[in-house]
Image 1 (cartoon, rainbow, N blue to C red):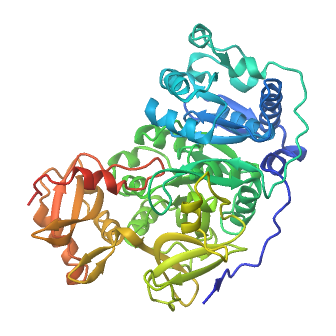
Image 2: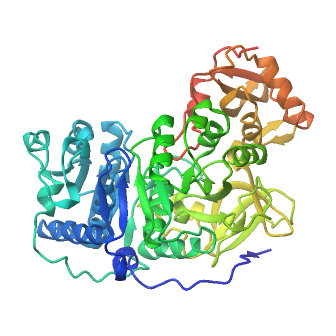
Length: 542
C-alpha cells in the first residue's frame, strides 16, 4: 500500500540552489544573515551574496567549474556559507568533510570524490596538508580563523600563519573584481553536494545530491518548519553534515532568518549563545535534549527566547520531550531523515500540538511511502512495523561510482530503502522503531535498541546511553552502555536494569549493563554501534 503525504504538493522551482537562495534578495540585503557566535562577527545577506559571487569568480579564474569537485574542511563559521555556496555558484560540486576526521580519513574522501581543490580552516591545516598530499590535491585555500583577526568574506587579509604556510587564503581568493561566471546548470542532473554516508550498509559512500534534490527539500520543509525573517537559528549541528547543511543553514537562509554559528557543541557556550543572541529555533540531537532537561547549568541562563527545540538523528522519548517542554516552556518537535533524502522526509509541524509526541510526525509534501516486511517485501498495514521505503524529489541520484550499492538502495520504482523500521498510525503519524540490521533477536522476539535508549535517557541518573545485542551464554541479549550523570556516581547496573524492566515487556529487558565515559556518536548525533561492538568484551557492570 502506497502512503501519501497529507500535505498538498508544492512546486519545486527549476533553479540551482544559489539561485533559490540569492537570486532575489529584494529588501533583505541589509538583514543579518550569519553571526559567529564566538566572535560576534556578522555578514548581511548582501555581503553573503557578494562573497559567494567572488568565491565563484576566484574559482573560475583558477579553472574550477562545472563537473569539478571541491572539498570543504571547516567547523561552522559564517565563512563556511560563503565558501559552500561559492563552490556551487561556480558550477562545481562541494564534498563536505567531517572536521574531526584524521588526515587519512580526509585523504580517502578527497581521493574517492576526485576533489580538485580543498578549502580548509586554518586550525585544521596540518591535517589538510597531509591529506591533500596523499590524495594528490595540489591546491589548498585557507579559511582563516576569525579569532586570528581575518575578515574572511569582508575581504581582509589572512593571518600571518596562513601566509607562512604558502597557501592561498580565502581573503586572497575574494580579492577580485571579476564577475561571477555565467554557468548554465541542469538542476535535475548537476550534482550540488557530495556528502559521505554509510547508507543502510557498508562503508562510507559519496551521496549524489543534485541541485533539484536540495531545492526540493527546502521547499518541502516550508510546510513543517515555520521560519520568518525575524527567526534566529542556532547552528551547532555541523554544516558538513546534511542535517546542519540543509536544515540549519540553507532552509534558514531561504527564509531570510539569522543563523548564529557555533564551531562545536559545548554546553556552557551553547547556553550562552542561546541567551545572548536570543536564538528562538534550535536544532539538536537527543543527548542535548537530555542536558537541557537535567543539567543544573540550564537554570543559570535566560533561555526565554527559545521557541522551538527540534530534535533529529535518533528517536526522542515522549517523556523526555515533555520534561524539556515543562522546564523551558518551548515547543519540542522531532523529525526524520537521512543524507540520501537531502535530508528530511518527516517532521512534526511547528503549529501542530496534536501530533503524538514520540513520533517523527508527518510525511512531507511531494512524498510517498511504503512500509514493508523486511523479509518478504510485502506491504504491512497500520500499526505493524516494517522497513520504511520513501520516494520523492529529494531522493538522491545514487552513490558515486557504486552501482551495486545504488541498486541495493533504490528500487525500480524510485523508492529508497531506508533500512529503518517504522510504524504508521491511522492518522499518518510515523514512529521509527529501529534499524533493520540493529534489531536484537531475544528468544525469537524482536527488541528495538532505539526504544530502550530513549527510555534509558529518561532515568534521572543517566546522561547518555546506547544498546546493542551481544552474545551471552550463546544467546543474543540486549546490553546497555550507560554514561552516568555527574551526581549519580553510585548508580548500579541492577538499578538500571530494574528501571527498564518495570517499563517494558519481559523480552525487552536489558540483560547486561556496562558504564562508560562516553557514547561514540557521529557528528549528527547518531550512535556508532559498530564501535561499541568492536570494544565489546569487557565485563559488564552489575
